Length: 247
Image 1 (cartoon, rainbow, N blue to C red):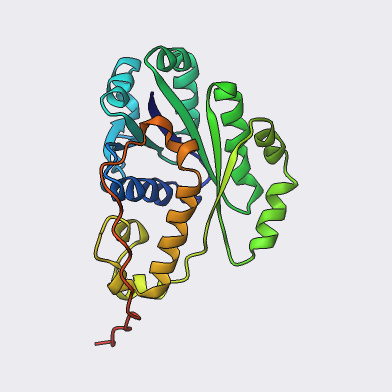
Image 2 (cartoon, rainbow, N blue to C red; image 1 turned 90 degrees about the horizontal axis):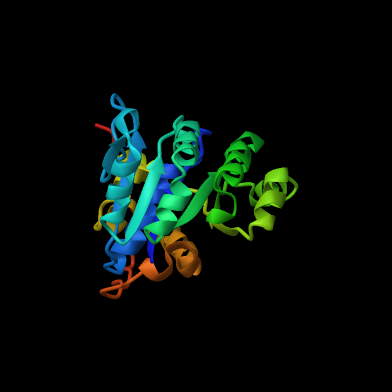
């Protein structure tokens, strides 16, 4: 069965693009056939490395054709387009269309410690109900225990418990200085295969932990669409990144 992995949350700064690129990177390591799509608006560029779907002209036929072409699709719904996509999905009865086409849906909802980021979780549950599997991806800050408590005591968490959602914890980024020195964003780094030496051991450690989180949910996330054609290369030991001297 084919798989659509839908990543959405209209609350800014939840790490949707980073999460999409982490999934993309994981699948690349195993040589799994997949595609990365971005739902965006005409005047807003798509996430680097992805194919854009223009929300203003999107039709059910175009949407189905796009995700039916490849066994596994990751769709990043741009910030501010969550409500649009939910209405599009419900109004066109996409749940039935995808089911008939043999495409299963996993809804990935990245959240932060801010309770406002939980709103999209409730909305997604109302839209997709039991026609999808759910995964909550926590963007962890330095106060991990506090973050966890905020989520565990929320209504959104109780709703996700009902749907037996799986949870991932994306570790804190501790290599901002290295990114700055290399004049690189995290999203740019995730699209390069020789970046470990440039960013150093903190990036390597972070990347290894993220890939481990994705691996722990591999079957749930990708299902039968996960068809590896190669084994990932072992990570090289990273040298400590040297800070660049100011000119």
